[in-house]
Image 1 (cartoon, helix red, strand yellow):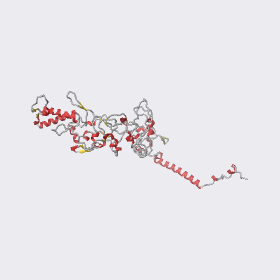
Image 2: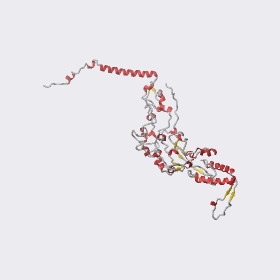
Image 3: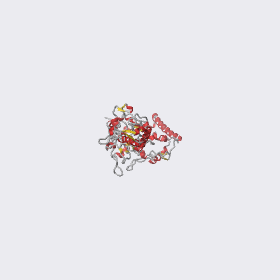
Image 4: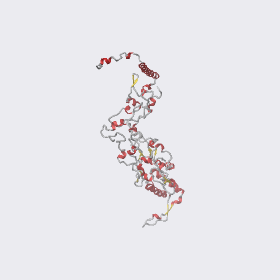
Length: 453
């Protein structure tokens, strides 16, 4: 007959006194738990006595806020001796009265939602793309219309072509420059030698602009100094952003005549003189040229006897006398007219746009309008791309023959390096864009102490 097993019989097999009997394992677990809790309390109390508040910190501060490591109250509000985890905008604005993003924006994120601290020595500007795409993935404004693309989710997938290229914009500069011609091999260089020009001969950052140039000539500014001015016409730059720094290595400085052109393109104006006119406005060039001619004729009075030039004889016109005897003012006036005609019609016109004067007035030189930045709403740092060959990005420069060509690389060129993946360059929004308008940046209040509390 089989044995019957009931629940009551099974329960009778359980030792109900098991937990009442002492166990070495349970004893050690209790002592260990109590010991750890006790040590934690002692450690917190010891740091409180010492005034070290790092015990409350979830992590190291960013490098920008490292001086505030022991000054939690600078950012956090204290309630009954405890600091709240969330930082209010009011605390941030105490030091950083940063400008807003756009006047027409519908949503303004809190400071701490984008700039998360206590993550170690990281850049607070290195924000997540989510902070940007919460608006720009479906952009809307108070007025309804916007000048920007409404749907941008990431740089790699749906970022539009750069605006200056997307619109087919032409360069507004008036300086005539043929990149293709200047990059040809065996060009005639200074002193008649053969040269091969490279991009860095003319294009350098603002921080490196004052260094020696292979085709510059410091003495070309002598005429400017004698004429009482040191202005260079190429300094007329179209600024698209007020954030350009004069000593920055990020952006390229405009090329100037004295630094990049003078050694090859001299401004001699008369075969009798070795002097060159200053690279300046006609109002400065004219008196300089007249003064040089007056000094020359005073030292060479024999040149007042001017022989007839047979090549200037005209058919059916009476042949003039073999010689003309001029007064010094007459000689200077004729030579000045000839020399200036050469300058305005050939030498200066080779690079500049000349606006003829009316009624014998001096001509005008059109403003250079050199563009310093083509993307005013983004930032690009040339110094971070120093290992990359210029022509590998600016490929159109090799074939460009018009100064109106915009030689900016397209977004496809940037995506060769900036894309997702562990072996790719950073491609998050903050790499090129900032939320706060840098043109309206305000100085921090600086109201905290650098001494530890």
